[in-house]
Length: 300
Ligand SMILES: Cc1cc2nc3c(=O)[nH]c(=O)nc-3n(C[C@H](O)[C@H](O)[C@H](O)COP(=O)(O)O)c2cc1C
Image (cartoon, rainbow, N blue to C red; front, side, top):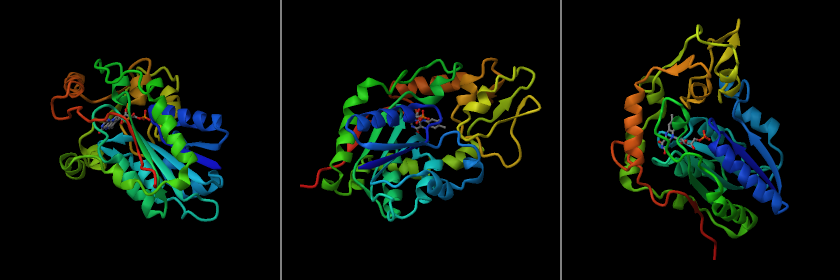
């Protein structure tokens, strides 16, 4: 059996989970191809996901796809990647398992979206997993509230084991996508009507500011931007015409040693919002139960 794991992970949490899954499968002597699309040069500028997949993904039986949850949704890059998947013939597996990581607030409708999109490509989502993780914005030093610091870690080992067993017994499972619709009406409604990520990105999210005076040309922002938006031109971090939109993951802000890159935002307000969220209050209460889970029922 051959399994392909495709992952997009701006701040590394989903990558950690994907690596745990890969390790678990390799220990069971399953052949795995690992495809991390994060930071792939050109991919997010030209959005040629279909071509990329044809070129880089080997023949397989089972396809696993990992994504972070952004604004209660499956990240839009992963949505577009799934839409570009070739039909499950000629060495492209029919069985699929999406997994998402979220920052302790709410996993929203991300897994449900992944299931629906994968089904539209003709695949069967036999299981799915959501993992409660550190909120990536809380990796930024100016954000002093740390939600789920250090997670995910070994605490999710049993869930990865469960998912990996579902892969091994794939033929025994049925379409599990109905189980991915675990959110109540209120959350689904909010995600659909209020949490419009692309709109938020353009109009609500704070703007990225680069102060070239403070920059020491270390190149960390360039190397780590998950969509390769920042380039070093004449020793200055620059965003050229046609660069992909900022996805507001916060990686450049978190890694910049001189605070030359920041977001134009009121850090106090964000600290208050996130601390309320972590305590289960405010506009983004963190009250999802179970926090992490595997979905998918055996076909008996
Ligand atoms: C712009 C943005 C939006 C986010 N939206 C949510 C959300 O709606 N709910 C949540 O619980 N976490 C949210 N998060 C946190 C991420 O889902 C979480 O940290 C995830 O594990 C990041 O995965 P990665 O490390 O693979 O990038 C958001 C993070 C960012 C940067």
